[in-house]
Image 1: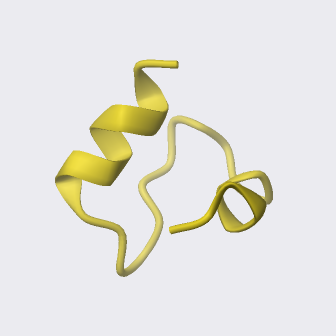
Image 2: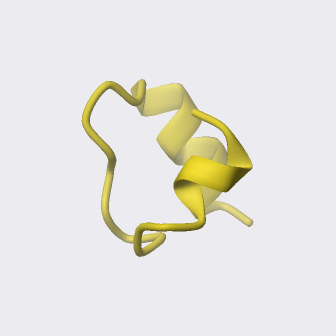
Length: 29
C-alpha cells in the first residue's frame, strides 16, 4: 500500500488488501 493510497483513508481503517504489518506501520505514525 502506497502513501498515496493510504492518504485517501482514515488511519484507523485498515484497507482491503493491506497486510496487518503494513497497517501497524501506518497506524503507529
